Image (tube, rainbow, N blue to C red; front, side, top):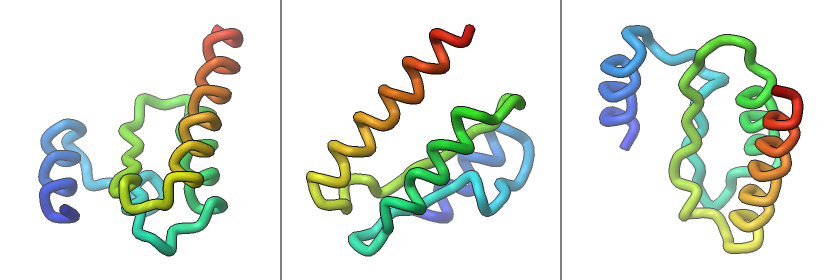
Length: 81
């Protein structure tokens, strides 16, 4: 998965990704790590491709919380614009 992501990222952006804009989840990924990535995603002022991968490996409760958080950030972002 990581190699394909890197190839796709370079193809889409023409740049190498920074370490703080990609999170590849596994069953041990913390809520804090996911929240940090999502927060950066929604406050970034530059056109940046943020990647959250492997979310299907998280337990269902964590996935539902992340979806709710994304919707919350997105709603606030839409109201701001």
